[in-house]
Image 1 (spheres, rainbow, N blue to C red):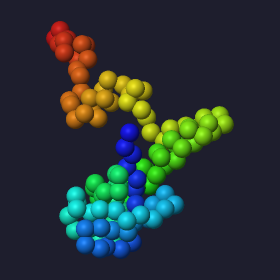
Image 2 (image 1 turned 90 degrees about the horizontal axis):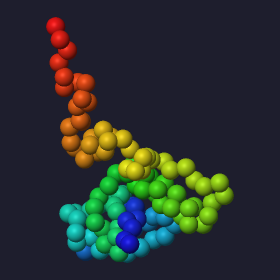
Image 3 (image 1 turned 90 degrees about the vertical axis):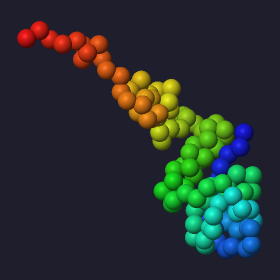
Length: 114
């Protein structure tokens, strides 16, 4: 499994950047994104920047990775997820997540007598 790590660019070199994130500093390839800049937040997979993200998204990913680390470490009492998993979503929520129109309920499709 490949997990993206949110990192912030500290400096740029031709085709590479020095980034920091999750307690480490790395030299990563930047050839897959257009013109990154110092201060940009990026998502790094296997030492390559795959996309630019904003600071809010970086914080969300960091929080999710913290939850995974706590679960792996057997955190006492478990750790509550910071988001709803698709398996816990209603049919309407899943349709909205996929960009589909909501289902009409049976009683909405029948006309009432006038």
